Amino acid sequence: MTGLNRRVFLQSLAAAAALPAIPGLLPQAVAMSRPPRAEYSGPWAPVPKILSDIKLPAIPARDFNLRELGAKGEGEDASEIFAAAVEASRKAGGGRIVVPAGKYRTGPIHLVSNTELHLQEGAEIHFIPEPERYLPAVKTRWEGMEMMGYSPLIYAHKCQNIALTGKGLIDGGADCNTWWPWKGENTKCDNSTNEGDTQHGPRDALMRDVEAGVPVAERMYAEGSFLRPPLVQFYECDSVLIEGVTLENSPFWVIHPVLCNGLTVRGVTTRSHGPNSDGCDPESCRNVLIEDCLFDNGDDCIAIKSGRNADGRRVNVPTENVVVRNCQMRDGHGGLVLGSEISGGVRNVFLEDCVMSSPHLERGLRIKTNSVRGGEIHDIYVRNLTIGEVKDVIVINFYYEEGDKGAFDPAVYNIQVENLVCKEAKRAFQIRGFKRAPIRDLQISNSRIDHADSLGVIEEVTGLTVNNVAINGQPFQPG
Image (tube, rainbow, N blue to C red; front, side, top):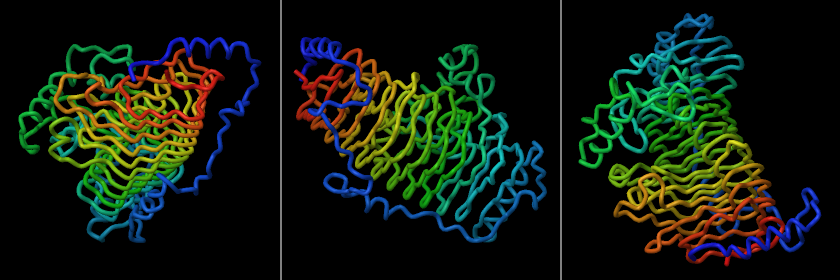
């Protein structure tokens, strides 16, 4: 398919303009049925098995209370007390580090197996934005590339049974004067500039190391490299729970689990509007549940990833078996996003019963890759999605960033969208595959877009199925 029929679109606009405006009324020709959440049949049949395979962490029933260890919660630097609590948990074989109501400043917190960091209501952890505190370097993944870099603010490596819970606030301490300036010139900070200390040179050097196959232990990109750490990163961990907390002002991505198995993110609020402030980015993870969360971010709300370029292909671990449900997405570059660090592939993703809307939400559903990054992306299912205001409703873009300059064509197939309702959009579609490697088997059914300024484009798609879809009040069939 090489494009949308412009004449059909103009006719749809004219017909819609002649119809009376009846808020909330859907023409009988495109009436939708909404299956209940518990209906897991057909392509949704794997969901119960995925959920049953996700094991919550088993945390021993013993507490290590920061106040009892000497913290006052009056804004003091409690770094040593957090470290003492973690060490006490390690020696005891695990437990719960309890942060009572109050304000605590700290450097990085490195959790150990069988440990829960629990913030009681009214508790605030404020990370001190002094980069030297986040040394020595640890193994991390940055924009899909493994390296030795600044420690994530909350970090665990090769652990089991890890939890971050509670009703408290976690503030990463980043703003337009700390951490974020390393991005260089950006749209989030009026004072941003490409002069001075920025990530540009080190980022390019890391990409060269990746392509050259430099061992990870020799990729030293901490002090002097200006590659910002994520707020929360659990790396190669099993049975992980992040629940209830509010996370703000992250230096980089907010929640970034890597190579984890059995991950639950529940009832979390991410509110960070800096450059690259993605909400939750599971990367090369297996068996993931994200539910009842609120994402309000400067970049993607949820971005599912699997490594970048040569590193993604070297590690070769896809993200798979992901359930996203009952989440709200506000500001962001995209609501549910796959990519762009996606060279290891993504499969078996199920999103349902989510609501997205903001004048600053750029895309609803988005897949972003190119022939440099590649990736096999398939079996992606979306249903019961309500979008208020958005720029683009559905985006699948094979020309992201580097564009068509590589030898690794993406393979994107079996994408199903049903029961999507969008109130207001600039464009309905921005879907572009390659002629030599088209997008395959894209299905859109029982859906409507009440108003779209433009249909946008659908190019290089084979097996496109559109059933019971209305745009601008008229049944839609691509020409």
